[in-house]
Length: 78
Image (cartoon, rainbow, N blue to C red; front, side):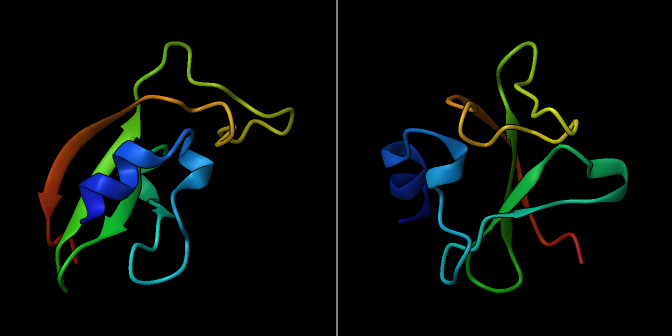
């Protein structure tokens, strides 16, 4: 079901931030990546697959402009 949500999204901004999908940014050594909830405790870890990564004026990732992602892992990172 989560892959269907990701495929249907026109941009990363279209991936819901509310449960059950809950797209959220990661921090630390995974800064610039995002996670989407699967069955607890697993997550799909993904990153923008555009070069250069679209940025806002404040330096953050422009989620509206991210139209391609790369799934880099499915894991329990907690």
